[in-house]
Length: 394
Image (cartoon, rainbow, N blue to C red; front, side):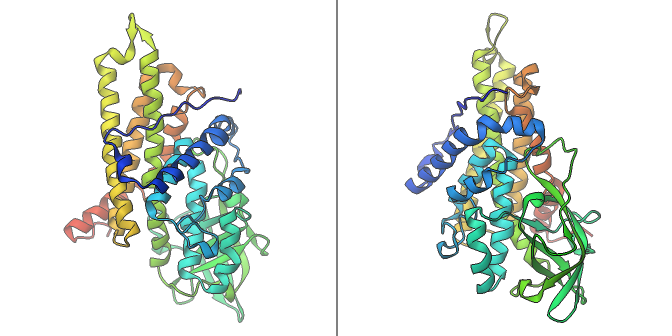
């Protein structure tokens, strides 16, 4: 497939750029140009072949997209959450799988090591993860336990200076290529603990998940633990219970809220350009009322989501955002992106299903993103419980 150009222009209907700092603009522009140069020309081909472009790991590290909010002394960027959000928006504008690679590395691997680890663990792992020398993954979801992680079966047993880990995790982004895995398992008292695993530990394997129709350019796999000896020095000492993994997911969901709007923006921009150029019945299809309705609704929903995400970014940077507020934004952005992808596909007609345009790839990717890190319905119930005080999960 021939390399393609990327004519993307970012929609900003309410002049939201005025709410950003010059540093925010520079960060966004650097990631946007990276996506135009390195991702857009190749990603369709990788998705068609269901292959992970492994070269992006080092590129994303060099660009500062791994752990941008982690302090600089550990290799991070020391940036605020709007900077992180803008990075994820631009990466997912290219492809959800690329953003997933960065989200997992920063929010689900580096964040727990920084937040819940000790100084020795931080110094050993964070700089190598930040640079892209090492790729990491996060093991929480199990074959039989997704939305209900408290029922996990993966467990550790005390064995002196180490623990013995048994169990399995699935739907793990980055797993097939990861050197490091942050894994959550129950100890003998039933308390959830975090452990850092390294590739090469005996009994630890990462089989690849095949046959996906979604996130085809992202590496997905399982984590299988067969009597793995994990040194006690690899246990995260500063957290116990589900608040550990859930705290990581809050950070990652924030990135998803921004990222999925990036995919929506790409589909809107593609559909708008196509509607101006495609002529039927002697005029551009953008001149017809039904196509204008779709486009007007797209830009309205994008603008609303941009405002929601910006405000959430301010609250996150100030340390005031609640997990429930993040849930609302994640759910909203995924729903908006899903609808915009579908409407854009309709505007493009038959061309919308081809690899000549990004729309169908985004559309399939969002079907995963709307499910992972808290399904659409679970986030609805999180908001419901927050506003009523009643737990509808049980």
